[in-house]
Image (cartoon, rainbow, N blue to C red):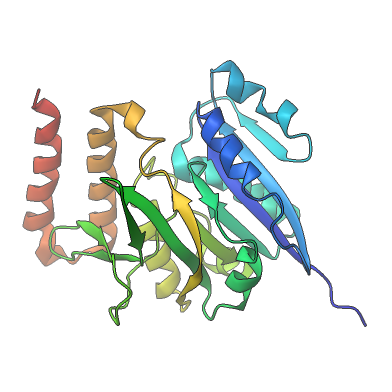
Length: 262
């Protein structure tokens, strides 16, 4: 008896960044789909630019959901997750619209990787030099997070929401992203919550994506710091011990004070 294809829905969120989203979608062209029923889904979060509003005309085979307002990264992805559940997807792949797939056997290798929430290797440029993201760690005193740039024996606390393959069973148990995080920390929060439910993280270094770092958020200016501070506080209240309260509040004040600088 022929085995049923695995149904994967790729979710990316667009907000007034049609060119980046177009590159992301094009990067899936030609990837190996053997054994996979693949759907590309774009959630547009209230874009006002004409290019974004008409992006669906360029990609008639891509599913589009248009939100009337900007729901942020978590809220936009949650609309996509609702659709994936309705369509009875076996897996969802969350990918930033400013990321592109670099490997043709990308999906097959992710599916074969041991673990529940799977991340590929993420590459980005820092001062023109290629840097790789091997997962994130959380400072349990100040609530700061940082990313591992080398593949070591250090076990990450979470993987970046830039690209995550999540099976439906994890979504059924751990739920969706917390849309109280408009931006930032939603990936760390989700991974920590999933691990608390008994799931484990997996890493696939043999395939990679390229991330145009912060291209989608640089337009926010100082507002980005306020959003970061709000998300930081929400995350710390949920995951850090009460003994860390004075430390993470101090760091949160520091983040907010940076908005006052010229």
